[in-house]
Amino acid sequence: MSHLDDLQVRADSRIMTTYPPGKAAFVRGQGTVLFDGDGNAWLDFLCGLAVTSLGHAHPAVTEAVARQAGTLVHTSNLYLTEPAIELGERLARICGWEEANVFFAQCGATANEAAIKLARKHGKRQHDDKVRVVALEGSFHGRTLATLEATGQPAKHVPFAPLAGFVDHVPYDDPAALLGAVTDDTCAVILEIVQGEGGVRPVPDEVLLAAREACDVHGALLIVDEVQTGIGRTGPWFAFQDAPIEPDVVTVAKALANGMPIGACIARGPATKGFEPGDHATTFGGNPVTCAAALAVLDTIERDGVLQTAATRSQRLVAGLQDLVATSELATGVRGKGLLLGLELGTPVAPEVEAACRDARLLVNAVGPDVIRLAPPLSVSRQEVDQALTTLGEALRTVAATSTSLEHA
Ligand SMILES: Cc1ncc(COP(=O)(O)O)c(C=O)c1O
Figure 1 (tube, protein in one colour):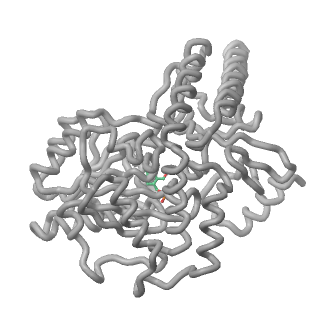
Figure 2: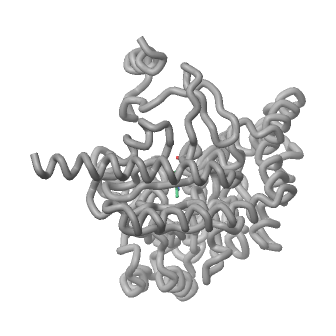
Figure 3: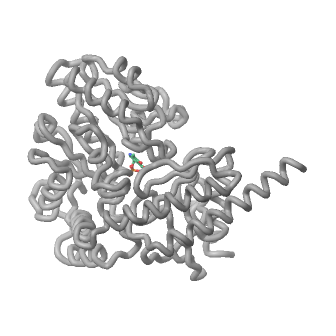
């Protein structure tokens, strides 16, 4: 039995089936490469869902984790520790916000959960019914009950209905609908600047501007969910820094600690006064080891000019994907920003293209029936970009040939 099959059999009997069967099993990673149990090298252009942005086993992160794990792992938030406070200071600085504060969570959903509770608290100070949230169709904000409800994908709600009913969804590209949906009972608008799980779809500037305007008019908070876009994934530290708006609250998670579980809800201005002692808490928030890992990530990005490298690699990858659009009968367009890119397909064969890439040991994924997401490490090399493009081109040819032969069968 292969390593993958053996793990799957054991998983089937002991791990709850919230995921489909594993498509590969890995034992080690180095930079952009993952190794399976047979020692095969796989090119990782997915980064554990936009997480390992500095690549696997980055020495600075490994060193920081080992050092902090051997010094102090956990105290709870009843006591102060240096790494969390330093990370709060650093996050405020990279947001470019003088007056800002941070709540540390474990992941994207718990960072957004904190942001929604913060907004409700902020809203209820104005009047008791100011608890409603406006979100965009196609969005993804997490799987806790509140963030699931904010997620604009009705199919994900169905197994858990009825939900609390405090979120109104509007199309992701309709500024008038958004302006119409926000009322005096709205405490927050939550949105991603590029919808990641929803298919790598940039939200139009007009919608971002409408969200800002509606929040200002109605005294609501604008929450920008940067769980997937943050820490350089789309170019700058945060995607909002390239957008025509300034949020009141930003959430970040995935890439912040390069794979150690962390989430952060960062507030500025009046939103900094949202919570009081006892309003919100979590045992592991601000854990010294994860915060030390995050500080190592931020240090490395600054020291090594990672955002600049990523911008250059993004240009090369986009140019290569556009070549595929010009030459492949399946690829029809490229969307996204920085190193969060989507290759659009003219027919719903993204799962087949993902599988063909996997057969050639390239990890990318289908986010929807007709889009392939590419999210390589920000530190990806030129050669790795070229190698991935070659493999992706071959995968497109294989799938095109199979679809044609099926049509003619
Ligand atoms: C934009 C966005 N928000 C929230 C989440 C949820 O994050 P997590 O899975 O860490 O809870 C995700 C995960 O994909 C995401 O992409």
